[in-house]
Length: 72
Image (cartoon, rainbow, N blue to C red; front, top):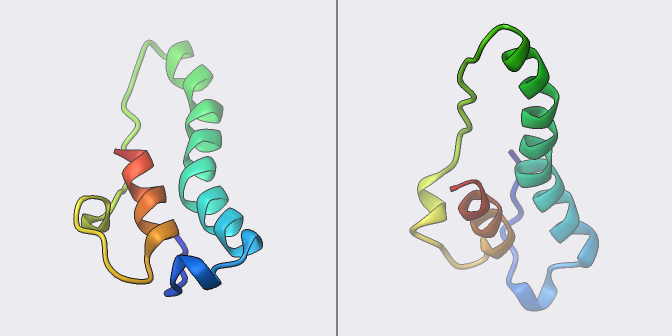
């Protein structure tokens, strides 16, 4: 995962997208790629890694915390 410690007021769109795309959208793509293989073998598990930041946000971590909350 990636994160940038910046207040929302100074966080660029590019940084927001980089964090969300890596930490949340990347997991979506990984899961979507794995599902057909799991189904072909009759099942399995997908385990994603979130963060305590998903439920305990911190100053400057809006994008990171949002991306981890999205996983939850």
